[in-house]
Image (cartoon, rainbow, N blue to C red; front, top):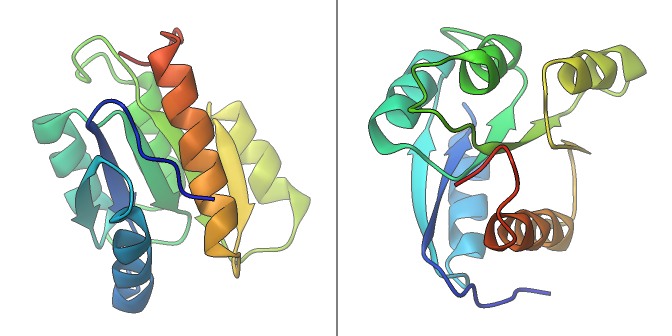
Length: 139
């Protein structure tokens, strides 16, 4: 269930599939979020460093820097202005090794494709509640 957000948080959605980017962006239209997009890992890093998003929905398999490399940059880089966004990694991979690797990299949630858009909205609502509460890894 979509919930109107109290603050206008920034969310970066990263996927090399234009249809997925469009679908997620449209679904987020019901929320009071500033939606940023990137179609590859290098662009995602650039947008994140320039725009300082509060949340990132990150595909695992990306051209020009994979999702794990982007995650490492987002969660481990001091260049992120002293704060780290909440990150949900999404993937079509079904094994547990990728999830474990993502968790070791600091991912805040993990979702497997295909997924119901309501599940992603629930994750975003959880992230915004954490941001409102002032979690350690967020503004």
